[in-house]
Picture 1 (tube, helix red, strand yellow):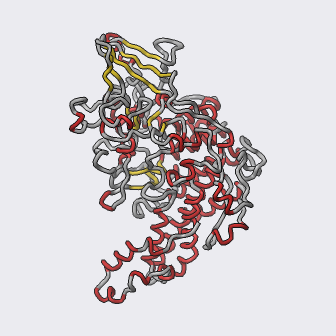
Picture 2 (cartoon, rainbow, N blue to C red):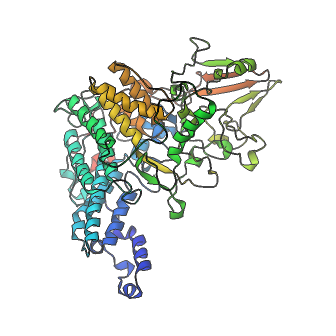
Picture 3 (cartoon, rainbow, N blue to C red):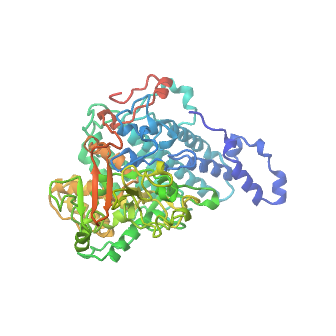
Length: 626
């Protein structure tokens, strides 16, 4: 894993230096081709540019930073399906191996990739080894260097956290040397050693970094480091690494202390943020228990508030702790509208939500959605005549549901954008059409957003739904990139981390956990959860994470750390909707056709080290089962 030449990423900084310097300064500058690694540590601005490259590669590669991808990690769970490259999702195919990592070993998921993360760790190590050599002229320069060191510790901690979450204990490198030069002597640290190494970096970052609003948006903050700590310690307290899998293997399990001690640490890390020690954060919208019944207009207010969290432009709201802002004016673009939008808008229809997830969203009053409520025992088909729908609109399974459904998923009948000019004749109102009309003569008219549509049928949904979350209703993906943000850490995660840790500790902590959980529910327009039973409370918080974080990537980590992947990874089947000439509507799961064959193997709870990396260092111990 070799570092790129320094000249590859200092050109922008050099140009800016030339543009802002006086004429005399310009004449005294070195030529561009004269800059070397040594030059970078002779000028604080070039050092800052070097750190900027480390940001550009944090958990990412190319133009797709962090989790905002054409292929979402959510499609490697029971949440979604990638319609274009399903075979690359080896985690749900049962094909994950050192020789076949699929997206987990490529730039598609470079935020989990061994080679990509170590490449950036190498960059950070070079920075930390040299930054104290940079000459300073003012106290402001000294303060900047101290802050940049805090940023570097955060970046390294983030990258190592990603390695731990995917691989367990890994090779720990803190010195500025080419890893390949000494690779044959490298060994994997234990899970505990890896966690402790990361925590040390996080503490340095928390100490050195300012709070939110005190630094340029997008740079690391005290809150970002504290949120990373909360995420790391929640994983480290969970079943997977506490006797759930290979309990004596120190590469993937803790063998010291107790799980209760680790849940306590996770609780305290979240509480540190909640108490305002890392900055001021709050949920958007109201956190008051909502009315028992709400009008469609009131539900829409909650739905829009939730949807808009992921469509922020400019200054972030109070819920964002840290993420990436995409701005076309700065050449920093992302394309979720065209990646995920319906084919009837000339978009690509990727990452379609799955039927079990759609059913997991509650009713508007907070009661569970029951598919078979009108025909007990029939989990496949719903029917309703025109008169029945008028008398009871909730016979349509997408009516009367909780607000987050309407902020997350495009279903048949959902309102979306005005159609492009060549599609207005098929749909003048901008209504999603994933169903079929059965005409009086027995012929079928396919909806504009089906795979039998008149345009780009190959991009049509395979299972009846499209993703709405992350898309901008005001942007036409056919022509324009998006400028909304990818939010890596938000306050809702901290609250649900706190809720889960408290519930797992039980006793007096359980009710404190429900308080945090209910804040998230109330903001979503749902009533409080109430129980004194730990097992019930555990299901409450797991359900809440599933819905609140839908498609954001959390589910992949959650089903692993809870060790429920074998229960939820099942074959994908399509929802098909038919509207008949007599006014009858049928919603039917096609259980005779498998849209995506899926399979689970227990060893896949951990990503294997690729064959390429093992060949470089055969002394490394492979993850269990591979």
